[in-house]
Image 1 (cartoon, one colour):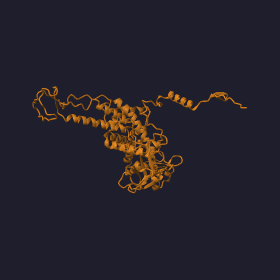
Image 2: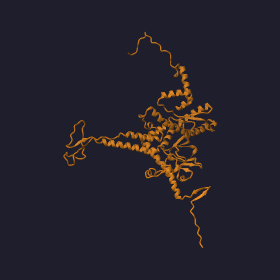
Image 3: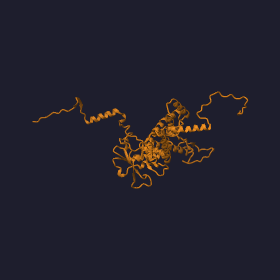
Image 4: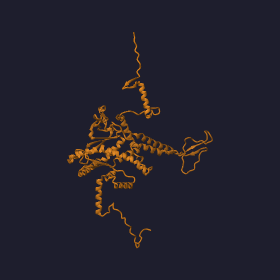
Length: 492
């Protein structure tokens, strides 16, 4: 005797007193797609946007900026900077505006004598090693190479008692040798600890593109304490940088192609002084003329044409009326990735008025101040710490070895478009006690204590020589009446 048990399909299960329906995988997938479409239009893949987003990926920061990707971007960025006048000018302007004539150190410890001594010696050392020039080179390298490296090393050729120096190296030299390329704790020349912090750098002794490169590359390992590595970190977990002008590389190429195309069209039109044409049909009544024949013309001469033929000059259509507008728009888009206004990138402010120029410069100056703060913390503070360690041993002041003394860095100020208005506003702020002399001098990149001492020396010397002080108030009494007996000796 067979017994059959009828099993009813389960449509739900009980969880905590609530009925939850059981869904199949296809139902779950359909529900997820429905929610996806309902959430964001940009997440949908349609026939219209399929090709546009075809290159989008979910790679990690280090995988997206892999060795070959960064090498290709560096080579192309260097090519554009070397051959494109706008690219060269933008990179140089950014480096000059950021670094200027170089940073100046002001010590803020409680010992005024020590402050002045350290400031003077560091100033002499920075000139001996060319610190300002090297900082400008590092800033330009970040724009076209994506990152810059400097090794803190001993250099006996430095003409100072502290013979530490910054040895600049290109990003191409920092890479992993073949025997370490698959190490889990190594990212293209960076040796990382378990927490992701760089502990050492693999540096090639010779540039990979130089003539002295050997078949088996010779590397040296530099500890992280002696290496300065700066780049713009766009994504969390990113360990190597890409050129800052990467988004503008296709635009630089388009700008050069468009300029060359316009020039070629203008030259082609200028190659022909005129053409002969006829309205008569083929084998008509017009005189026979040899096709593609050349006629030499003379200046100020009357010319006769063969019967049935007319002469017309070639009208040059280049450059088009939109040529200048196209270059302006594409150059504006190029400079946007660097927070640089158009008039600075183009070196042309003819289309600006005072208000628009000041407004555009505000964003650029804020970006410069952010970059200067970044360089002060990532480069200058480390350089000062290494310099003080050497200096403390030489002068036997071991208090400098305990911690980095309080200090600040001064950079070149930005010239105001209207100096008279800026001076009036500065005077008003000082009278209202809404600013200080230290802040106002810092806006100009100057040390207020040094400037006041210099001003005191000038005033003392002016009093000694009997010269009127520049801040003396003019005479406000009534002007003396002219003497009628004096003869008028002026020109009539």
